[in-house]
Image: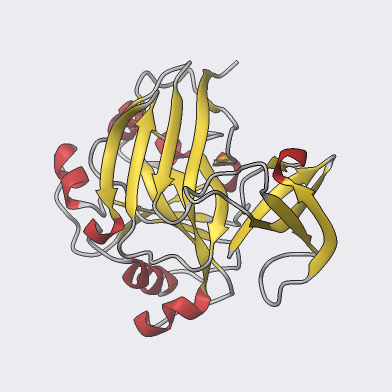
Length: 263
């Protein structure tokens, strides 16, 4: 099942998307059935169905918090000259950094080196804490694509990651949430202007999804809609105004965003 969030005129709705192509892309026959309320719990159809071309897709969720995991792919840790951590290394991104598919990543004037980071995002489906590894599936709503955009020069100069990771537009999410993904063996890639920059598999993660959700929930209570970014494969690199960045995860789809200078 694919859960989306769309704008109809001036109103936002969750919905179910059906009729994607075999490649997971929107086509002429793609439909969006609106939901009454949120997708946490029993789904209630609102009654209206639109063609995908009649609605505007936005970020599939607006979380209370985004918990991101650093250095969770050994090759990425190595390319930045870092050791692989012995336990998950986490940091927070603000909800104000979230944008949806097609929305522009705005480069801040404070940075001269902004980079892409393709990531699998886990969307939490229920309030939870201290979740055992074997119960993680019970608290996960689904998965989506993410780009953990990073001002790399500020990350290095600041000595902590809050500013470098927290600018507005620095957390593209989408295009929808997939509830039945085989999350531990999905191909993940990032393409900039048609050129593949990152290519890996979630199977290469140091700590898998179940380990991450369990560990993080032992630190902080997770709320419905909270998002966990699970780390990025090797190949991160710069983006500049005029670029188009696409994150693709096998079984989910493709999240594409243009890059602009912040006005």
